[in-house]
Length: 227
Image (cartoon, rainbow, N blue to C red; front, side):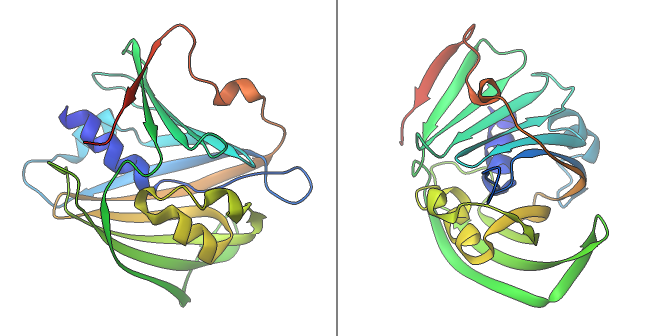
């Protein structure tokens, strides 16, 4: 359960991006992931093994998927966000069950969201502006209480912000409304537990087959309801 909570916490902030061949980005983005521990009980080696040091994002306009290349107890993790269904699917390589969660099932207390026009970083040869967010996790038995994140974006990789209005996990609906684009660098701090940095290393614009965004038919889908 501890590992699942880490993944659930990690997923929340992750990569926002959607697609249309003409107006919105569709394609594949590779990211590297690094960690910094803030707790004597959490080791960087554990995070690298159980979450991974890289992930791949596959993006369409109304859905996206992320595969974290972990090598730990549960193997890799695949998360599918279906904006057209208002559901998230989480699959672990070595589990025979896929967890299905409806948008809005998590409880968060919004604290602040701000744009940082002077805080820019060069990513893949181009300067990217950033936004920062802070909120508290108010779910029962949360893995972390307070979250702080800074996301760097390039306006050339547009998304359809209207499709994110119901994607309230981690307040991504507010973040996408503010930026209108894909996040290419995610700096996240999970309370006093650990920090992570995800950064895009390659971007390939291409058509992604719909099957990439369908749950594995060989596994049982279990819907997790709000507690």
